[in-house]
Length: 565
Image (cartoon, rainbow, N blue to C red; front, side, top):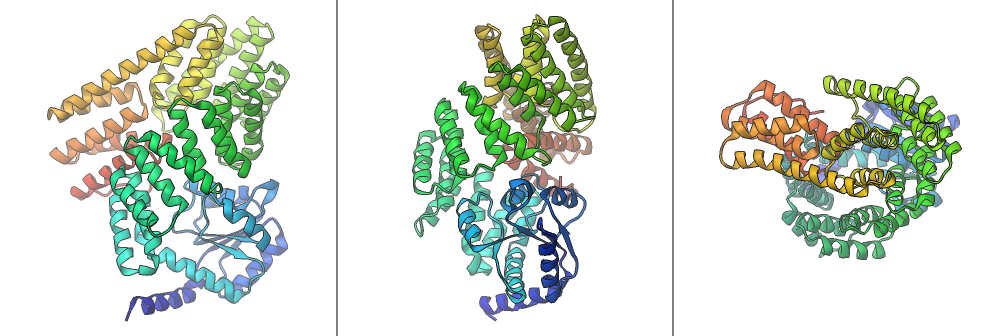
C-alpha cells in the first residue's frame, strides 16, 4: 500500500472518529451556536459546548481540554477569532494538537487571511454544509495526526527529538514535507543551530519566494552575528510582503539593537497601522515612543492596550503604570488620577495592583506639591514592596513588575530617598541587564531627576559586576571544576536572578549531573531556575537548549520529569 492509499485510509478512519471529539463553539450569537451544534450532530459529534465570548473561552480552557475549537471571526467588543487564537497560543492555554478553525464570511476571509499573524489550522467559509464541515475537520485532524509526535516533543521541550520527528514526516508523508521542513527549520533556529537553519530556509527559497522562509533566514543570520545583513533582509521583506507583520517586529528589535530607536518605532507603527488589534505590539509601540519622547504616540498606544486587554489574560498592571507615567509627563495629573482609580477597581485585592496604585499616588502628589502625602504613599509602597519580594522568594508567584519597581525608585528619588532609589534601581538593572527597554526606563528616571551621569555610572557598574560574576563560573567550568562552577553560578542566580545567570546555573547543574549522576535536590533547583528564565523569555534559544538538556540528562538516568511545565 503506497503513501496515498495509507493517507486515504487514515482520513476515512478519522472521519469515523469525529464522534469522539470534544468541540468548543465560539460565537456571540446564540442562534449561530445552536445552528453549529445541530450541524455537528449530523456528523455524529455530540460533545459540544458553546460560548459567546473570548473571556468565557479563556475561563473554560484553563479547566477543560478540547479537541476542536470553532470560532467565529467576529467576536464581542471588536475582538476577533484571530486575536483569540493569538492569546491561547501565547499563554499556552491550548496544545499544538488542538484544532482551531476560524469561521467567517468570504469577504471577511479575504480581508483577514492576508494579515493573519498566527494562522489557524483552517478557515471555514460561510455558508457550508455538514458534509463539507466533516471533510475539512477530518483533513485538518489528519494533519494533526501526522505531526502528533513532533508537536508532542515540542511541548515536552524535546526539541532535538522534534527535529528528528520532522525527518520522519518528510520520509513517510511526502505531501506534508513542505510543512515539516518549515517546522524543522524553525526548531533549528530555536535551538540556536543557526547555520543549519539558514541552509534549510535558503533551500526552500530556491523553490519559491516565501515570506516566512525569508524571515527565518533573517533570524538565522542575526543569530550568527550578521546584524546589518539581517536588517537589510528584513527591510526588503517588509517591502515585498507588507502583510507579514512579524518581520516588522523583528526589524524593530534589530533597529533598536543598533541604537536606532526612531526607526524601531516607525517599524512597529507601520505594523500596528495594518493590524491595530495586536495588544503586545501596541504595548511595544508605546514603550518605544516613550524612549523617543513621542508622548502623544505613547498615550494613544497605551490607551489602546488598556481598552483591548481589559478582561483578557494579556492584561497587565504595567499598562496602567505606563499610561499614568505618560500622562504625568504631559502634565495631565487629573488623567493619571483616573488611571489609578481604574487600576484599583480592576485589580481589587491584588497586592501588586495596590503597590502600583500607591506609586502612582506618590508621583501625582509630588506633581501637585504635596510632599507629606507623597511621603506617606512612598512609605506604604516600600513596605508593600518588601512583602512582595519576600513572598516571591518563598513561593512561585508571578514575577514582580519591574516597571513598577523603577517607578517606585523614581518616587523615592523625587522625594529625597536617594539610598532606597539606588538600591531598587541597581537590583532591577542587574536582573534585566539584557532588556534595553528596562535599562532605558532606569536611565530616564535619573535624567528626570537631574542625575543623568549618576544613571550612566550605575548601569556601567552593574554591567561590569555581572560580567565578572559570570566569568568566574564559566572559567571554573572550562577548567573542569564542575562542582566549583555550580556553586559560583548558583550564588549568582540567587543574588541576581537574571535570564543569563538562571540559564547558566541550570546548565552547569545538568553538566555536573551528566558527569556524576542525577541528584534530585540539585535537579529541582535547576528546573526552578529554568522555569523562571522561561517565564521571562520562553523563546530564547538559551532557555530552549537548557530545557532540552534537562530532558536529555533525565532520560540518561531513567528519571521521569515533569514535561508539561
